[in-house]
Length: 419
Image 1 (cartoon, helix red, strand yellow):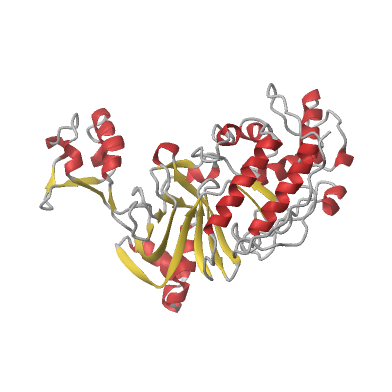
Image 2 (image 1 turned 180 degrees about the vertical axis):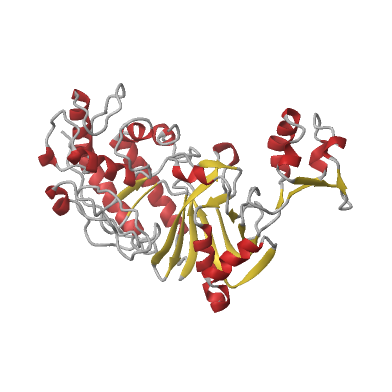
């Protein structure tokens, strides 16, 4: 038998690599509260969980001065799990939920106990009760999944990623966290692409966390560092040439009224509007023109665009397709980032501009339907990052799908992308 893993030394001096206090030995779930100033798991399902599981600090940023140390501790914990035999697989021939009685539930309990989401005292009975339901929801929250307590699809895939693969994922992301290095600033926006999530961070705490939709694998959102400098209300949308070629031309071949129905106008090089019927949609002729969508509820950018001029021509924006925010698979854009509750984020970005840009005024600007650009008095740093595994001070370990296949881990790549 191999020797048990020894304690690791931190030894990193960067801003993101400081040591931290020892974390609990078992990974735990994560809460989803952001604006209350405290984490919340008010639904206590069993007495044991109240004393066994630390509650994630929802105000702690994904990247904090202690993130690297927390990941190192998580690696030690997961190596110990591997040394103890890891966790078993959950059979995939049955969807499991509250009330189900099956030998598969016993396998599920063993899996959840192995990762610390279920207390060992809950036992290996074959009934899916409230103890198991709470543990499944903890697991789902830690993996960025909808916490519905149902084991099937994306949840099952995530559960059946081995502990060895999770260790590799943590090690890869420890390198990423160190590579960012330095002070990200007192006030910044972080887009974590695999998590499809946006954080507004101020003075070391999360002021707002927002569900997002990011680039699909064949049109990936880029890794970048920039500064947000202005907000556009009721923006026009100038269609990128890549979208004209990949999306607009095929749509017009299917439906000649597509541009008219979505109020997208075509302009030649002199700014003259031309009739869509005059364009040969079975060629690349349209790529030579400018296509621009009028402002409105139908606009692909929604009512707000957050701008940071960059070589990739990406930005944050609103969207009329709000139903996408309520899914596990939020990788649908052509590289830009759609933000749920974007007005809250804009309110935070414009706060340094003073009383003139209260939330009421933001709502009024949208209701007016008029196009307007507002310059930020404080140009806010923004970081597009690719972090698929991390941990926080409470010992909560988080995992997200390797949607762009950059971890070299096939199981972690497919988890959560098919459900």
